[in-house]
Image (cartoon, rainbow, N blue to C red; front, side, top):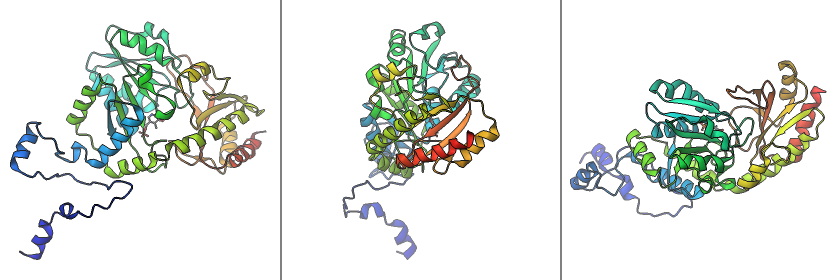
Length: 386
Ligand SMILES: *Cc1c(COP(=O)(O)O)cnc(C)c1O
């Protein structure tokens, strides 16, 4: 045998009988997965094969992370997607068909709403935005062809909460699917399946992975919806790179201690801002002053590190720049849930009545810096406005 052939014909994975028991699992990369016999291959073609058939059939790295998420959520089935927005888009496509109508809460992740307007609409699926603090009143928005309600509570800009149990009760009576983006609370602080939700979505890009170095999303379901998502995922052959799954699984192990720290610092900063002379409203569900605080207290077991506030005065863009650019610990950038403090600012665009219409919303991602340093930074930044 020629040297080149010897190299090519070695199956290195078969030589791995060292069984090194590393704490974290190995990363499996692969498109082709070898069958032991032609019979196995034939059975795979007939869906009668137990093993993994191909890269898009989810290699062990994807499956391990998927299982960790499923257990954390208390779900029946979890599937991983290449980003949070891909999870939203695909979950919506899996559950709707031409002629259907869906309700979307008005504080849901903007690009998800844009997908409804620009893409679902094109395929004959209509949507109606419902108020960000909807509850039992959703009844008035239902149409005979309403099949799904997309919720996000709290919304990740303005933090209104929906009354999820009130909505899921009405939806169940009419066989309407409820889907909740639970990225803000994570499965640690809200258990959506316990309050009647059928499908949960996560941007794993945020707290679950925790280090701002990957994009991934998940869709998890209860018993009833699991065949729908399972079949859809198989048909679409969605592939999330193993490296992302490996990193997200690794990050997940520090989720609880990170989140407890985010929670504590964010509450301290939120209370401090409430007493600041320039600040009007602090939009944080765990504060007594939040309009849906009673709902947060009833349904959630904690709060994370992302919240917003508004100013009493309407500052110009130039004045806002003086404040924001003076911050040294808060960096400017999209996304959140990582260890670094971040700030964004802007006005909301809303289809329904909104408490904060025309108000500039300053959104803070409270990172893992020492809280005293975060406060000092905000103090010196805000001093540029007075
Ligand atoms: C960021 C975010 C998403 C989208 O996640 P990506 O992984 O960035 O695509 C979805 N929902 C919420 C609430 C988010 O904050």
